[in-house]
Image (cartoon, rainbow, N blue to C red; front, side, top):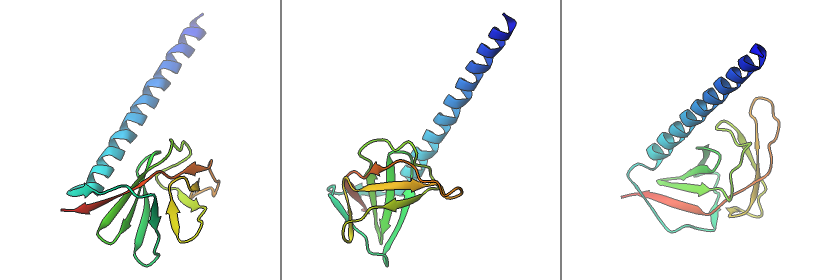
Length: 133
């Protein structure tokens, strides 16, 4: 009986630690997004993002639903079509491109930088430009 009580207590402690870690990650993502978009105003969402290797920086993975790209003075934000559970902040994105643009609903796979193990396929959402006022 004591063993069951101890296992239950350990399970609850693990849930609490996991919830605290998730809350910490969400707070960090919110701070990073606010910092990246500070002083900027959203423009009209676009279906596609032209990728020019000479001027485009990114991606910056904010969380499992938000990715940023930078193009000169603009910051492009895409909110993914749905949560990408295998997407980590330090992952490499392997994008299936059709032409010279990345578009809404195009597929990509996050690849873990350390292990080189690819995650599940995910889809981009609209691309919203943010410019300084």
